[in-house]
Image 1 (cartoon, rainbow, N blue to C red):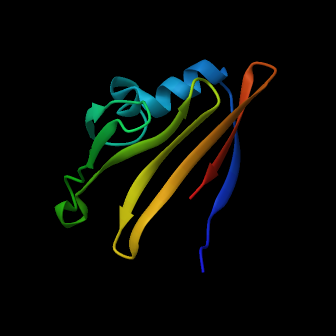
Image 2: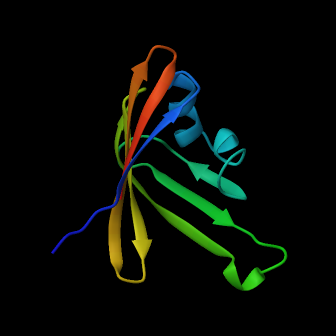
Length: 106
């Protein structure tokens, strides 16, 4: 039985900026992973991100996977490997008058 977590956010930024923050390696490290050495944001393109916790190095982790769907300023989805198996993370974006409605489905 497939289960998913769906959350909706309003981001006080235009859709183009939110999309770039989800796909551009230099932008991603400003808010999420410690490093993002690879982000080839196109269907079949690879990504790699690392999380480093200097005070708790036992929690350090690396994720790498593949982009499934990339639609400029609309949607980004990619694989995410968990101990339970491979999952899919999808972000859908919609312009809301200069802000962005962002829906996460994992």
